[in-house]
Length: 463
Ligand code: IFM
Image 1 (cartoon, protein in one colour):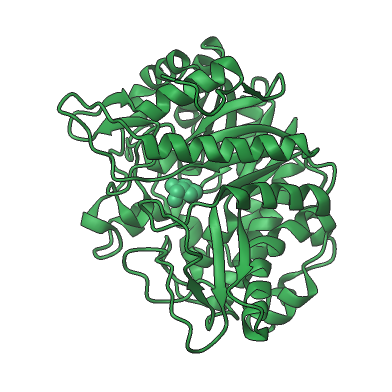
Image 2: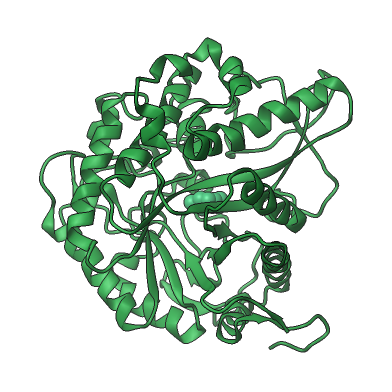
């Protein structure tokens, strides 16, 4: 057996807007995702998170499902507009109570709660005031964090602040593929700084271990030609170093600052900001899905669909870069499957930003699941994906990387942003009309791995 260290967290992850539903219950205010998903042409099939998978009402069953599978840690997100319906002002007690009940039920089931404060659902009034490009949004986020800390700090030992700030900034404000759907590259550069600042300010008010959860990609140049090497530098800069360097070195990478010069990132930085952003926070969440293979040549052919409706680049200063095939098999999202890239990124982060406890806070795959009439899904491709990526984690740990846990994305099928309900990432199948949940083979496989604390050796029958 390939054994993981004792205490390794075997988790599953979700986020509020993707699963909760109950959009108008418990005093919740509207978020940018409510507005965006109700805008025609933004989401496949006109889907919204209004009902999602109704976790708001079914959370106790979902926790029982996790416990029965063998999952020992649950990463969920707290919806800011449930805690502060307008994004500022006093706490909405009914919203806080929902998360108190959720956390209490998790603890009772022996499952560790790993909340994330911001998984993209900015209260709409804060966007109306300017959104993340506005500096004040970082202060509002810190205020929200202190309300959550006061309400849940007695029972939650670890927190993630912002999830995938690359997506919030660049899909939200440059390409417009995500809420709030703005196509203003200069605003996206300002959003980067204020998301990081918000993280740092929140890290100063949250008790216990705190980290951001960043989406890292391994990046390769399509060839040794200088245009391709430069493309790889730019994409690695925007995707990885733009977030990691400020968090752990207290400075933006000079080459990326230069690339973003026309968009004014440097002008947002005030004295003390970089110290705040690099507040020793205690951990880092790594969300990993794939590798980017990139070319800067004008004749290169390639495309990565960040949304079914993508028209505009989410890469300010690197709009000319093409994303080309690396020749690997792909998931149902068209993302290349590259577990070696996970090992590469974990090893690199541990070397370049030493002594930071790491957690893989998301990893998983959408495939074309076929459910039988009773909702049973046999998904060997997802089992193989999880197995390969967990083995990459194990190899990283064996080489000295301080990796303390892994969270499969996602616990159950859910609202996949601009793809609506057409993409299924779950360990558990959800029949949307009835909301019936049935664990997939991958869910049972993952729960077994969690129970035994390791992976069966290849060739072992593991059912
Ligand atoms: O569903 C998303 C999640 O919200 C953030 N990380 C990537 C997942 C799959 O696209």
